[in-house]
Amino acid sequence: MRIGRRTFATLGPLAALGLLAACGSDDEGGGSGGGGEEDFVTDLTFGTGGTGGVYYPLGGEYSTIYQDNIEGLSVTYTDSGASVENIGMIFQGEWQLGIAQSDTVQSAVAGTGEFDGAKVDNLGWLAALYPEAAHIVTLAGNGLEGPADLQGKRIAVGDVGSGTRAVSDAILSAYGIEEGDYEAFEQDFSSSLDLLRDNNIDASVFVVGTPTGSLGDLAATNDVQLVSMDQETADKVAGESSFDVYTIEPDSYDFLEEPVITLSVAATLIASTTQVSPELGYDLTAATFEFADQITLPQGSLISHDYALQGQGDVPLHPGAKKYYEEQGLL
Image 1 (cartoon, rainbow, N blue to C red):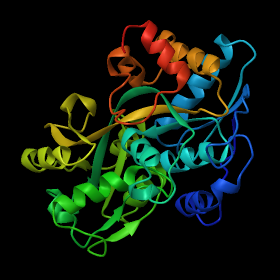
Image 2: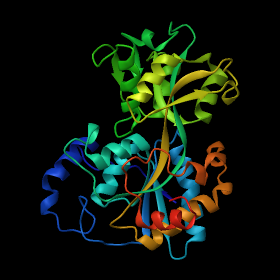
Image 3: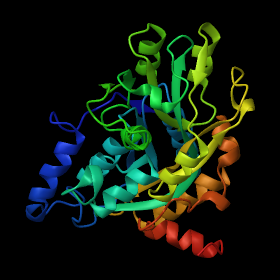
């Protein structure tokens, strides 16, 4: 099941989080605004991402898995702006499950970066699912041989409410390109590829599991190029942040001939600690791994216990997930 996309504040996700943080101490409702009383439910809304990325179909497949294997559970998945929006909706008690970049989840629980002044306190880590690589995509003829060439260009930097912007900013800043040095387009993954195809932008930066079919579709009709970071700069950024160095191998896409060096984060499954009970959190975590072989997307083969805690940092485990990992000998 799925529902149409909802935005949770006309001011945008970050402004809404800030307002909630300011008034959260006056909120007595269960789960709303974070830190409220427990109000466990079994009718869950699952925030995913844009329809052109991996989060959306992955959330759909897992929604079916959860409903088919957890008694009495209903899961409705929805497209969204991805990481920031999913976290914001869980914080408000509107949604109960979500997928988000690991670095964005870390910022949310720490109240730093994009979440400055809006510390999220009702979020629990269920599992890291697979690595997501930053793709710097352009078309032949745009004159982009390396990230430094993005100076002064028109660049899609991620949708409002996604975690892509943080990675985009880190890459651009590493090459001396700051806000104002380029024209930023806040677009979802699918829309950014349409803009690129029509030559309305010069490049798109997006963070997604590799490979992604939408990029293959673009390459079927256009001469697509991925822009690579140099190893030294990638290592430096990774050493100073929560990102990892990642190599997109040539066999990932038919149009690639050489490895592409970039940064990655973990795609993370998160749940409300005030609306998802420890028992349900346990069942969700167990089903995530036990039925991963039913995921038809390429990323399904990467979902394993070995990667489950990658990028967790200081993010608290959901109590149900903690019990599951203890039983599996992972803690």
